[in-house]
Image 1 (tube, one colour):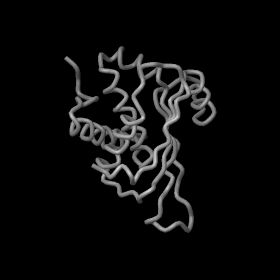
Image 2 (cartoon, rainbow, N blue to C red):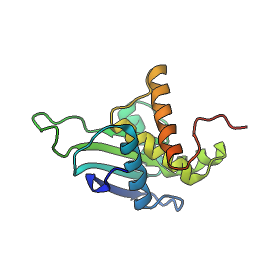
Image 3 (cartoon, rainbow, N blue to C red):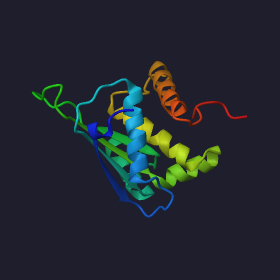
Image 4 (cartoon, one colour):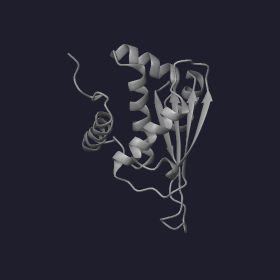
Length: 163
């Protein structure tokens, strides 16, 4: 597993939902995503995770993606800093998760809420690490990596067809 001291994770809880993971669980799944991604990060690399309500998520999705609707997870990559050595700590960016949407989607899909939270955190982290799903090939690669990370840590493949 990635040395979690390599990551500095700021967890912000900006919603009243009671069915959210602990900061320790959030940090664990982010570390699993980094480890499973094959990407190397410098010690002290930073990212933020903000858990929000539907109103904040809808505003962010509208303002930054032009989609006036609520969604489950958004990632805002910080990008490279010109002149910063590759081995220096980086700021990866921000992951924003809508707690109510995660809870509702988990129930609709018949998935354990904690497992679905893990999936959203892994998904968001992979975006910060440069993975995307804009094309079918990219989507297949990213979904395969998500499934690999989650199953390697005892969770079901989130993309497997349910019976």
